[in-house]
Amino acid sequence: MIQVTGLTKRYGNKRGVEDITFHVDQGEIVGLLGPNGAGKSTIMKMLTGCHMMTSGRIVINGCDMLEDPDQALRHIGFMPELPPLYLEMEVEEYLLFAAAIKGVPKGERKAHVEGFLGLTGVGDVRGRPIGNLSKGYRQRVGLAQALVGDPKILILDEPTAGLDPRQITEVRDLLKRLSRDHTIMVSSHILAEIGQTCDRVVIISNGRLVAEDTMENLSRGQEEGNLFRLKAACNREELSAALGDIPAIEKIEGCGTDGDRRWFEITAPDTDEVRQAVSAALARHQIPLLELNSGRLSLEQVFLRLTDARAGEGAAL
Amino acid sequence: MSIIIKKEVSSFFSTPFGYVFLGIFLLLSGMMFTIYNLLGGNGALSGMFDLLKNVSFIIFPVLTMRMFAEERRNGTEQLLMTSRLRCVDIVLGKFLAAGVLFGYALAATLVYVVIIAAHGSPNYGALAASYLGFALLGVSMIAVCTFISSFAENQVTAAISAFGILFLMVMLASFTRSLTIPVLSPILSALAITTRYDEFTRGVLRPGPVAYYLGVTAVCLVMAVKNLEYRRFR
Image (cartoon, rainbow over all chains, first blue to last red; front, side, top):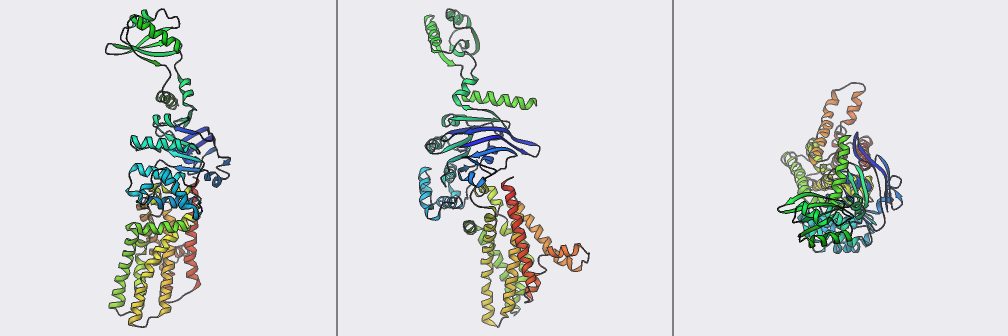
């Protein structure tokens, strides 16, 4: 549905984003992830025709953004980071206006908007001026606006910014419902949100693409070889003695203390068999096992590792 | 385009903005009508329009200052720019909406004509020429302000820039009368926006001044559309 190739945006001599290539398939929810200032909003603005690219190509549902921008934009519903709201308008009036400028025929506008009022949960405030609504409601009105016109693709820039945890959960559930018949690209710097909502992530750092994959593959790609961590109430010698008869273990290293409990890094194949052998050995030696973690990195750790590496490259340049 | 006109006119009256504009316009015109016509016993409205002409560089920037700046501040420019609307629809819609508000203000002054007609015998030809002249002057000034406003990121910049440019254009009318520099004089004279208006107040209606004001309006609107198109694909 979205094919981006070699996308570059420069502001004079200053680099916005450089040589970004990724794709979003039909029905996917893809997260655009990156630290503040990485270039997420710039990419989204180019995808939605708000900004002109310096070079590269964007194809939306088969329509080239440069050759046929009108046709390409028909497939897109966009909610910028600051929802584009007329604060003096009432909610329903605003959505009817959005329907009119998006080309929904006059006779169908009322029924068209009615569906999105219900879907986004703003039906109960339809007659209230947007300026009087809370941040959460305004965000939902912005989302309803993006849905108006039945676009196949939704591009949402930080849709949960400034919302409370309950509202974040509601928006997340709404995105999952919408993904049944929409292709969604959502940007955020909140990793938990991306992790729970998206099928794949595109990670941007310092204006460049650093990774594009599923979360599982990214974690696997970054995992620290055959490594797992355990926390036990013993010292290193006692642990070495207890685990000495497990041949798969190559190395045991202490990596921190927590009172009389200690963290150890164990280099061995991270398999269920090894874990069972380790826990059984510790039980035999009456050493309390407190935690046993995989060496696989969390999304936060993957993100920090990838973006730190890119920031380091940028600094070196 | 009609949806933009409707939205803009409705926004004028859903905020204090439209009422403040109409209030100031009618206060100024009412004061001049009282002084020139009621107390002075004059049957022509040229005095009132003369004053409005001289304060027009304040009135019209106020009318147009939020035209694009407000959209940029609220982020709604992106909504318009990514919709099916063309830049020409957006510019013309906003220009015509400002024209509608100006039309309301001008129509409200017709009550002065009724008062004059009730107490005397006005020269309807001269009155009609005065109205037409001021309407053309106002429309062309709104177009100049629309163009300047299309660059502005905030309302204050929009108002001050438009005020400065219009002030210069109004003041040029005084300078150009005494200037006889070969190339510069015709250029400055073309920019002196109120020079041709004086003919209307004398009751003279020639195609030249009408074409001048329509020309200024068209040029400014085309430039505003081009500016918006440039911004859209920047």
